[in-house]
Image 1 (cartoon, rainbow, N blue to C red):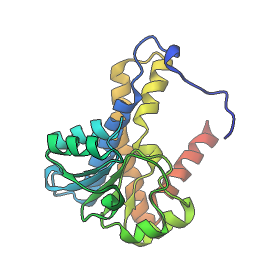
Image 2: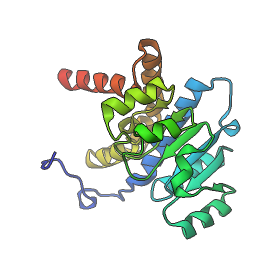
Image 3: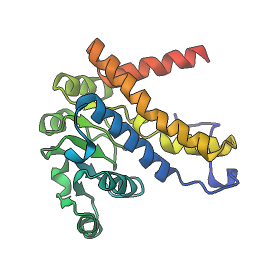
Image 4: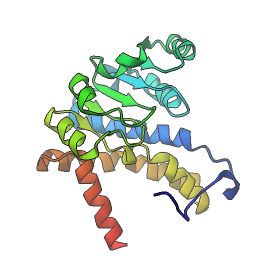
Length: 220
């Protein structure tokens, strides 16, 4: 949409608005859920994940994954800063052009959108793509189906990165921090449900998620 009447800004709130931290928390819950779906008998500390982008969301997410013992491969367009962060957290630095095609369990895009396209899908070696980047597909219909046919589980970005919007909406609605955390924790259950339905119906997760969202809009 080019225009909207629905805008939230920091001056709307009576306490600090830090959506990136809550976005990272939500992505972490989505990663946990995806790991449970794909690797039910494995702990997070047995998995390897490649993070693309170490900015406002990527860095706090890296910290959460590092704390969980995940083996990390990282990249950022700011090579000096990225290598410093990699050394600080014991991660392996990967050149930006190659981060998406590393052998790993999860590819975690936290930079620009459109990273999942006809070329990159054939290069991705991860079992799943879960990240904060908006609009991960260059062509949402063709690329979602292509990835699904290749056996790559792509968690819908608007579920995985929903923590920041939940935080902002709850600040606007004057909800408690506890209520916000409860909703972010629920991202785990939402991802589990979507991935279960995706596997059962043999449809891309984004198609399942869109159907659920449209049904809720119609019921509202």
